[in-house]
Amino acid sequence: MRLVRAVVVPILLVVLVLVAVAAAWRGGEGALGAGLGGLLTVAFLGSSPTVLTPVARRSPVASLPVALAFFVVKAVVAVVLLGVLLAPDGVGRHLDVGSLAAAMVVVALAWVVLHLRALRNDRTPTYDLRNNS
Image 1 (cartoon, rainbow, N blue to C red):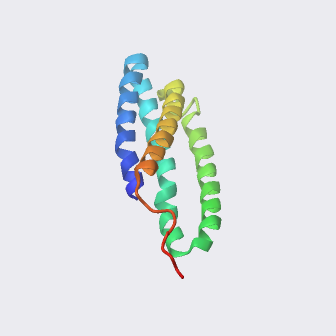
Image 2 (cartoon, rainbow, N blue to C red; image 1 turned 90 degrees about the horizontal axis):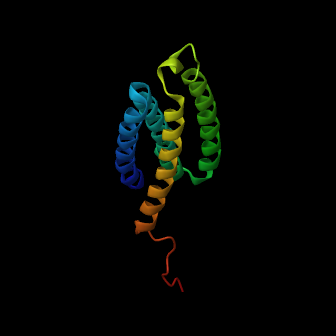
């Protein structure tokens, strides 16, 4: 969880910058698209460690099946959600699709970079050097 917190705060700042840039570039529709795209990406990427960390601590054997099932659920939800958001006669007419897509890509790349930085700076030992003889 501490790694997620080390990533989420800077990511929310990235989303705010993207909203400001999209608002200046495409107006209110751009700002709405960038904000929604950024927050959806944060929700999808942040949900995995939030759901899977307790499962892995409780039962490492169950973590792979739960991770695979959670991935399938997230994929289905993403397809349905994007279908609803991009429908031209629904919510999609109020969004700038370019800003939505750009925000999703930028936030996902920033998430990966910040997560790698947080993992590199984490001082969790990966193995034990104690002599057991």
